[in-house]
Image 1: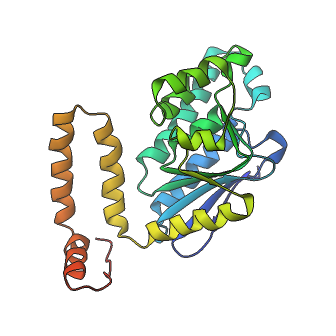
Image 2: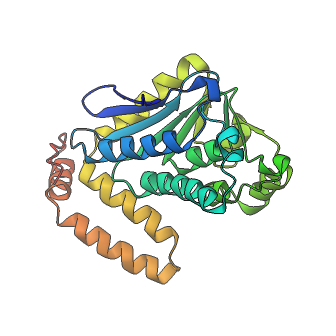
Image 3: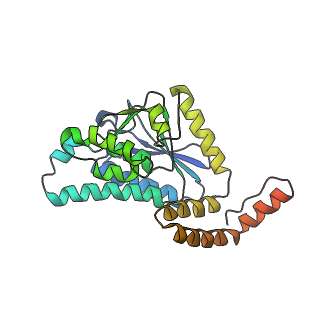
Length: 259
């Protein structure tokens, strides 16, 4: 069966994962979820790739789960399998070694909004809209809220969840769901600029830092400091930390070994 998920190498350091199923508004079906997980794992294991961008083709980023598929499942174990698979994708993004940037246009709804929130960075067009609209069809966006509520404060999150109303890109930026929004023409240029900046750093340092960032967020303050002190010590023992400090003191560009 042909996959709707494509990998496109942008340059030697950056790759894009593209959801190419415009007819379903890039819905996160069983197949698309499975193929997205495989694509992220493949790029995570590719030692040449330092940054991953995810985007959707057609009118928008992703409308979330395919409701035709969902309505046909009927059995409890099949629903559980679908939502667990979706959660597995989100965890793959968060726990993966590479920074992931969401490049969003059009709508990012429900699990599509969850996908945006799960990425490390997110940029959109000015016209993009975001929503957790499950209440409108009697299905509360419980799994999407896990990712979104870790980016957005409680009152604003609850309004999105309880009303199901979409929010515009400039408000999504204000509440921390996305980093920034641009014109459609400018979006690709700005996302690539950020990706190239990240790719220019030591990817070992980025990997250590990404892992530490998400782990410490879930810890009490004292435990978080103990954990991050250990992680900084581990980082300091790497060749790249020694090279980076030497380069700074010698006023030169560092030559990363990524180890």
